[in-house]
Image 1 (cartoon, protein in one colour):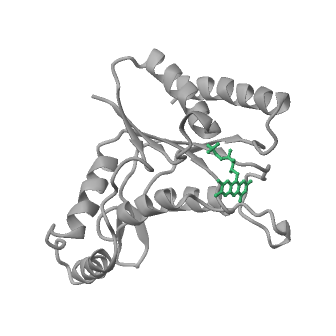
Image 2 (image 1 turned 120 degrees about the vertical axis):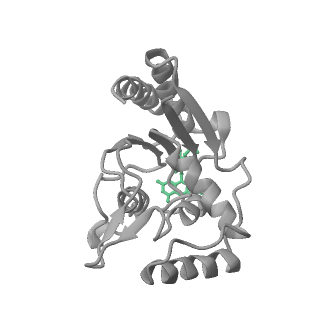
Length: 216
Ligand SMILES: Cc1cc2nc3c(=O)[nH]c(=O)nc-3n(C[C@H](O)[C@H](O)[C@H](O)COP(=O)(O)O)c2cc1C
């Protein structure tokens, strides 16, 4: 069965603009694809497996093993959690990510998830020319990003001053690193000043989300 994995990276529930637009996306998606499975993975509510000293050492051991032609390391301790989250990602045919920008970057729970699933040797292989080849291919990613301020949809420039968005470019980059090529972005911004303008902007985003879902 076709499966969509929904990563929700705002903890703000009904107050969250990114989650609200994601709900519009999902409602429309379910209408078009009633038989598809949707796995909701709210990153601030689920217990993400720990990734600390043991996991970092296992990561380096896995890379060494792969460089020596091995087939990977034992699935024990923190590495078992890593493999559990990689399997969850690999089981999805499509990924929806809704997230805020926090301090010009991503919320720490989303970074925690990234540190689990981005593993050279598993989700990324290295070829004989030492090029990285992402392994999680053939899946579209829809990002829905909410921010208090407006940002340009590009890599940060040195001239951006104190309002610099490192979030979208980083998350886009890391998903490309593990193999995604079809990455779609919907921005919900600026959410900083609540009022009728913000409400109208969010409603426009919901309409865009419904349209995006119909083609996802
Ligand atoms: C901890 C924190 C840091 C934030 N940092 C930024 C920021 O760097 N840039 C920005 O435009 N908005 C920032 N904001 C505002 C949020 O991006 C904005 O409220 C957005 O709507 C949050 O997404 P959500 O509504 O889905 O939770 C921050 C909010 C919080 C709670």
